[in-house]
Image 1 (cartoon, helix red, strand yellow):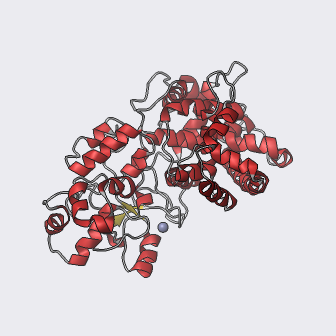
Image 2 (tube, rainbow, N blue to C red):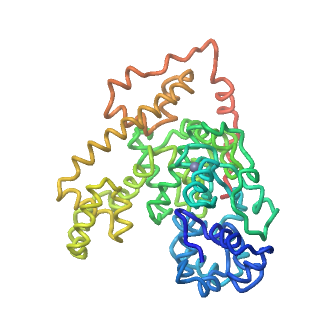
Image 3 (cartoon, protein in one colour):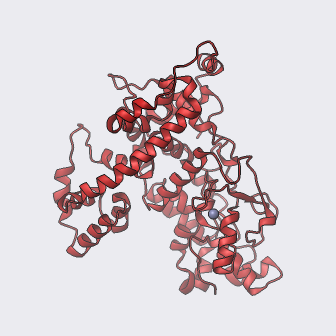
Amino acid sequence: MLKWLPDETLYSVCSRQHRFWGHSSPLETCEALFGRQIGGVYHDLPSHLGLLAARVQERWGEPGALAMEKTLLKYYAAWKPREVTMAAVATMAAGAVRHLKVRLGLQNSRFRANHPLKACVACIQDDVGQYGWAYWHMEHQYPGVWVCTRHGTLLHESLFKSTGAGRYDWVLPRIDQLTRSIEWPVERPPQAAAGFAALTVDLIRSGASFEVSRFHEVYRQQLDRAGMTSVAGNAPMRELAAAYFDKAQALRLASDLRAFPATLGEAYAHVQYLLQRPRVLVHPLRHVLMISWLFPNAAGFQSAYAAAAEVDANGKCASSRLRSHEMKYVDDAARSQIVAALASGLRPGQIAAQHGVRPSVVEQLLDENGLRLVRRKAKAKQARSNARSRWLSAVDIHGRLGVTRVRMLEPAAYSWLYQNDREWLSRHQPKRPNHRARPGRSLQKERNEGPLTPQPSA
Ligand SMILES: [Zn+2]
């Protein structure tokens, strides 16, 4: 049996095995791997992993690990309650995945439920050179990821599998069997798409399992931090919707992102919907869009998420009480591993997930070991460069619409620069809007007249 290649999907290793064995029919490989003729051949959420594991467990791992690490369940599990994920694992292990997409909420959403099989041309060339195989990378398959985070280039879509062609075949990426399904420049896809891909990959890579029911609070607190709620704590919905709408536009061209708001009215409904109450049933892509709009990166979101968990119902910080209680359960070996990981620059959220401790424990070790200042300096440098580049790009593209508009488009960058880099910010303001030219006229018109009532279905 072949061994895993880095970041490889289960469908990919099975397809390589098919090629390696030289079977003329895909059914022969199904029979050899799964003991039945069409078992396991789905490229996104395959079935019959129990049968597969019984044959290859020593080499490829047990069914739970296969489902969670080597299939698209890895992406969906980050946003689902544990019981939903465990039920999905059981389904994939046993077979009959027909209703799995419904249970994961994919079929009821307006997003594409048949996942395209995607590949990066530069990765194919590198992989053939390094491993002798072109193969499917897991991180390229995540919904909404259309840019390779290694090469910064546009991902291409396979002509097979999700299109129906070769539905029961084992295929590997081939440059002549890929198509460019979005009209973005291959070498320089839009910054928004690259940012969305990097954010998605970082969030899933952190291994976190999010309690999505708390997200609306995290979003509201972030709007507060960015000075975008009024004294009464209410968000100026029309302004927010306009900014969210602009953020979504660059991404809507991708086939799995077309359910992002197409009009200002829809954007208004989406933002209001996501800020009001816990929304656990919406497609994760909607949350990733909110996060990409409100936070500078995955780490920024994760620390806000962890901080929100520590504020109790009365608004009092309960962290110190919790910390001393939890620290008792962390042994010396684990403590020194966590400290080493912190010194190496890994993110606290990631370290907490890896060691199975609460984020507050990692925070306390940061304090106790004087690592905060070292990390803060490195982080501030990174944050400054991120915020400056996001601000400059927004000024560049939308500067004609005026400073308020640019500020609404990049609330996180503005807030960071205002607090930490105000002198630079004052030197890089957009020029005053030219009222005679009325550049924002059509948008303003739509903002006033757009339908504001529809609710997103999921
Ligand atoms: Zn690549």
